[in-house]
Length: 104
Image 1 (cartoon, one colour):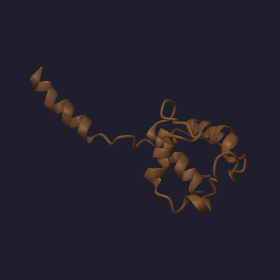
Image 2 (tube, rainbow, N blue to C red):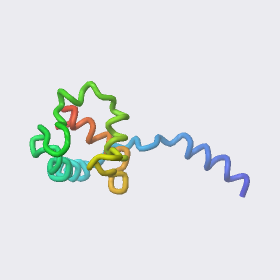
Image 3 (cartoon, helix red, strand yellow):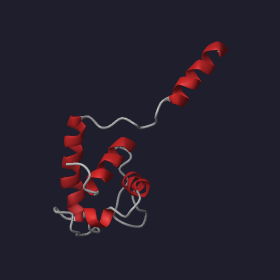
């Protein structure tokens, strides 16, 4: 058993964490989530509502990791819920790029 532990550990350590791009089908689902779920608070055109505006010109100067963390962990003390139970880190990074205008 010990002889397998090191090779398995090395393979796991070398594997990129969350590096996979969401599939085209998942990207479509994420686009719908952005329009419907995010849009319900941030406005259907992302110009603001209950939540702050999420326009590309406002998002571009914010760090990708901070935005992804906000998506996944929410914002305590605000209506922004955590989405980490249904979104992966790759999903959150894709949404960040979309919010910044980098994804179609």
